[in-house]
Amino acid sequence: MQKYRITLFASLALLFSANVFADSLTINNAWSPEAPPTARVMAGYMDIHNNGNKEILVEKVTSPQFKTIEIHRTVEKNGMSMMVWQPHVHVPAGKVTKLEPGGKHLMLMHPVKRLKAGDKIKLILYLSNHQQQTVIATVRKN
Image (cartoon, rainbow, N blue to C red):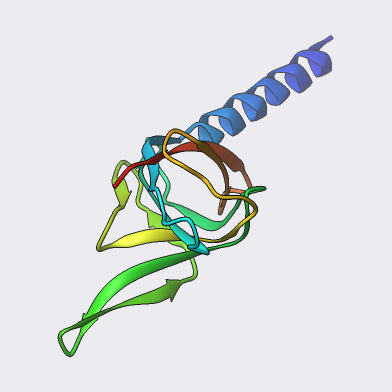
């Protein structure tokens, strides 16, 4: 009986800790500006809140609505703005990382179909804690 209680307690503790870690990111204000009809690229923005006590990296983002999604940041060099590919988005423990115009953002490339204001985009974030988080972004008029 004692062995059963220890196994049950250990299983519940593991389940609880996994759920706390999985729920440590909260995503707010996920959106994408509507692109011109012939555009093959859109941008994605959001606020990523890390409610946990360990840093988390967003290592990859996919969507059934786009062939490719890359993480970029905008930098200025010699008075020119350019986008630089990033391997991940770093979200420190207890902090908010913003993906926003003029900063870090998602490049949503080669849409399967044209998306207009009011449409929803399903984004799947692959995290360094081996979890996935689905986010729904809204397409907005610029």
